[in-house]
Length: 328
Image 1 (cartoon, rainbow, N blue to C red):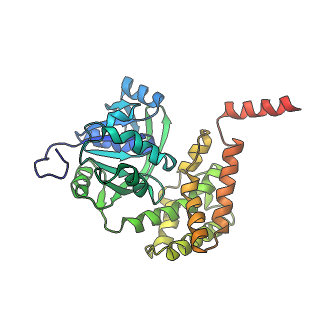
Image 2 (image 1 turned 135 degrees about the vertical axis):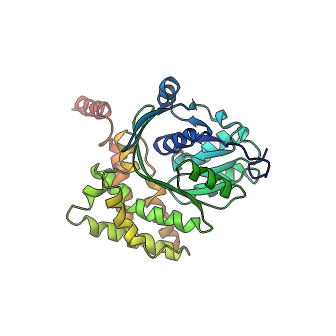
Image 3 (image 1 turned 180 degrees about the horizontal axis):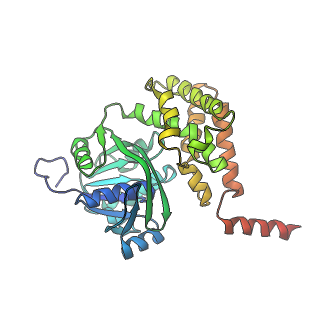
């Protein structure tokens, strides 16, 4: 029965589409609270979970959480809520894969970087499937297949939908602080500003946020990035909370040991979401007539790092060196 009906009072069924570090962490907390949870992810991750459960490592515990896991999008079948956690570059494709299996009225929550994933998913899924954006504040990383480490925070801000209030209550009961906001676009943009300030820099030097701000001139670069983002947001009619500067500074303290998701992608030799972070600011700036030279420079530098494989796996670097040697 539809999630938002009064008769739907039992435990919710959750599916996590694109279960990496973020989705697996939230999935584990929901499963421990008694909800049925299915993680949909990469084969090695899924195989490890099927064999041993998900290893969840935090500052206070190291435990294995039993979960269902699959590599197939059809595993969203029967879910009341789908947490969409794929990379922003894969939003439309993931929505297309899920569409035939989504239950009527199932809520799709986009827990992704960037500001337009809910709109892009909604364009694919249509009016039959409600979609709401969720802003995620959490520091996690994959420590290996079936192994997630949590470093800090873990709250969500959810956009409005007929089922959002119910889902927020269930999340809170599972130990995931969550609130529903009518101004989720502003919150998405505020997080985008923070991501633009740190993600690319962390990726280029492969260092955590706390290290970055200790380097000479780094806070000036961050301030320039933030100023460009705010200029684009203002031109786009988006109101960013006045405390955004304090929020940017605070990340280096509350997540001092965290390397950005972009840094983690580069280190694994995987495509990054930089086009939906600094790249989105550059794109909107160009459309609105706002110059974004610092964001553009960071975008280009990350894309060059992707193309060169400079931060990729050691075997990838070795093969690249062998190819160069062979051309001599």
